Amino acid sequence: MKLTVDVEITRSLLAEAEHSALAYLLSKARKVWQAQSLERLVCGQFGLTPQPDYPVAAMAAHMDGLAVGHDYWLHATPVHLVMQRDSLSLSEDVPLLLSHAHAMRVIESLNQHFSADGLTFILGSSGAWYVRLAHSPQIKTAFASEAIGRNVFACLPQGDEAQTWRAYLNEIQMLLHTHPVNAEREASNQTLVNSLWLSGGGVFPALQKKPAHGVDLVLTDDIFYQGLAAWSGVPFHAVNGRWADALDGAAEAKRVRIGLGAGQLQQPVFAAICQGLKRNKIKKLTLNLGCYDRTMLAELNYWDTLKFWQATKPVPQIIC
Image (cartoon, rainbow, N blue to C red):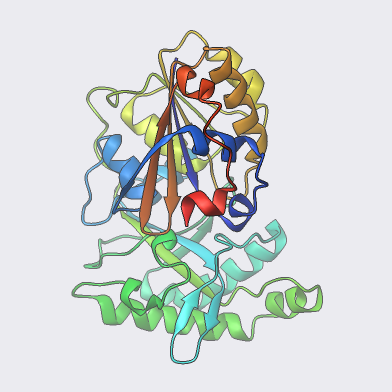
């Protein structure tokens, strides 16, 4: 089996102990950097074309059981913006997790406020937030991962209708500032939802005529990867956290891809991968580690695990 694993670098991954499975794998691997975010790398490898965004919101909404039709869809991800000395930056916890009841109350308020503007906010069964429009706006957006920890100004919507959409964002932030849900979150020491991050805009693209090159099976619980797999004609299996079982069940597939979403337990995944590599069940491993607007590509095989002279280092020493 040839295995590719996509994962975003998070604080929890950077805090991995020196002898964690991920640290072991990265210490043995051959590593190069690419100057693009993980989402852009993955979309390109699946054969998706930007229009001008990669239309992943419509694809995810389709997998979320929503009737996407010919409408234009955007992800409307709940986030927290942090005030810096002279700018705003995006906090790393993306998306912020809200209870279903809290999410529905915020979305109801948004729909009341923007009903005259033709914006409809929707909560998918996966917990993802979307905004639907009947027409395609003239904007280009950035993925949230590309804005984390940076001045968000350069990552706000661009294009002919940019000012309109930046005004919408200002209205959203004012609405959220006084929303009762945030008062309740503050009382329970939860991070406030003070903005939405708009990304992945577009209409549902024509289905891929042939499966994505280099992938026979996708293992994922993430709606982003499920949408890409379904669109490109690649079978996918939900894992429900049982990674060792999933990898054993995929043993007959020649080229497997794992898509790890935000908030998923990751250490069990890498522990199972380590075992598969050391037993030579995984012939080649490629790790795509998204680090904001860059991606590290790390490759190794069974023979690399025999390099006892390459000491295991903590993940931050390898990534940073």
